[in-house]
Image (cartoon, rainbow, N blue to C red):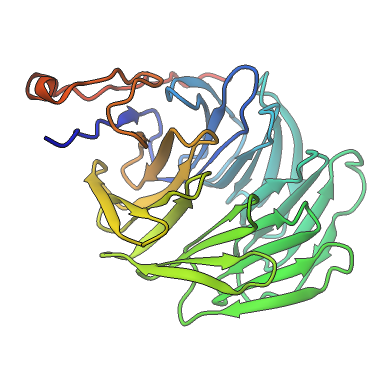
Amino acid sequence: MAMRQTPLTCSGHTRPVVDLAFSGITPYGYFLISACKDGKPMLRQGDTGDWIGTFLGHKGAVWGATLNRDATKAATAAADFTAKVWDALSGDEVLTLAHKHIVKTVTFTQDSNCLLTGGNDKLLRIYDLSSTDAAPQEIAGHTSAIKKALWCNGDKHILSAAEDKTIRLWDRCSMEEVKRLSFDTSVSSMEYVADGEVLVITYGKTIAFYNALSLDLIKSVDAPAPINSASLHPEKDFFVAGGEDFKLYKFDYSNKEELESYKGHFGPVHCVRFSPDGELYASGSEDGTLRLWQTAVGKTYGLWKCILPEDLATDNAEPLCNSPPEIKA
């Protein structure tokens, strides 16, 4: 009898969850931040989903959120024309970076000294966080709103995806476009895997893997439904994807075979990411919840306890993570 996947449901948001990101592994475990249209990004313990705090200060939907590697800093991108940097330990707002339009994406350099932003004004901006009075460096070239921007190649290059149906690779030093991918439809998500320089993108029903530096196609997979997000396991054994049919799909990376599919959300899945240790993956949905899913079903990990197949008939309860009050971290 197959093991039944039992996700942890993390409630607390009141609108669709549109982005999420894990920190690296720290001495205190790893952490998860979620961006939501309710304007209140949340920080959680990564392996259990337990709520730690809510970052209060944005006056519009939060479209993007990220943590630095050691989970000491957070950054958020919002519809109030700002990006904010936060102290992830205290929950205090450290810096507000004004933009000319909605901000969709934020990401730290590996040393946490610079922040990359992008959004509806079609510009990439690089902020030096050690010199907050300095004007940001700006990179122009996209012809419509930027949806996602990421550092790659040891922060020497930048990858950006926009509504103009392109993904572009930029040289950080020259600020010039190096290469470009063009598609028939807008790219819905983009993930960068530093180990192996792999770029994971989704568009339509396609999940595609590219070399992040050459932008050469490695392989692509067609899913059963339109996909909004995909994530590659740290060891590259398999990948997961979620989209418009409310399901999470798990595929074998080597032979592209569909291994599993689960329907747990009550709305389209907007974002999915593997944890840094690869033991679980998190999904965020239109239904306002995050769910954590085990990579190896039945293994004792986090709040999951090993369940033997013969026990499944009597074990039908779905674990529920704590719902946070509306207070600051």
